[in-house]
Length: 271
Image 1 (tube, one colour):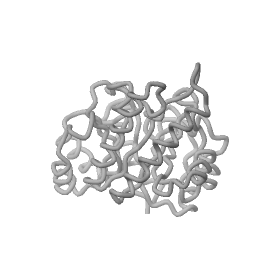
Image 2 (tube, one colour):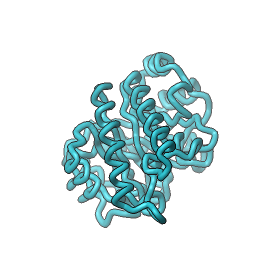
Image 3 (tube, helix red, strand yellow):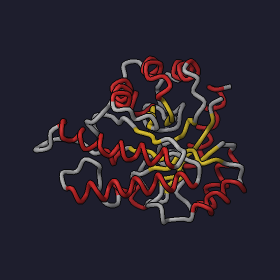
């Protein structure tokens, strides 16, 4: 059975980003629980922002799980990516991602690689960029295995990266390189831009789909855009997906309204 999740952000630079709740985590956990969510997805400045045991305690108190932890603060706060031409920045980027995998392991959650995958261009060729990305992903895959969690790789739309934009090519890449602890994030906003048939893309990726960002075509709550969701949910059921549908969305028209619309749509589509 699929489960619901909502995003909680604590990164000042992400105030205008697609995250629902930005207030202190104690308040956000309470909001999520009161609305009936199963879990929360955390976007934190780094692994030292809060003690993992404090997170576990808040989750237990509110009967919530931690769906995933983001790594994007490494990019938005520090400008780091795993494919930067500067070897020092690549090293720091990998250290940051590894540290978030370790943090995730302590709260029972996988870490997500999105913006920190970087992009190629100019003097940096696709071949070199992919070589660096592959090297980093072998390290993150191994660290995830040590923590007994998965690692989540997110294909983004063409305006945010040129590494992988489609689930099918990303899935083939993971298989080719033996990244057995790395799964894919099916972000429905990105897929609306890149996939001709999102449902079929999910079927083709199959068991490699390990997390879903539950967002409409305009990156708002599902039901506020034009994405046809019924076929997507059917495809997820067909592949036996039982993970989270996590709302990484803009908090429009308000955080509360976005959250309420999300849980309403989740229940209507999955029941």
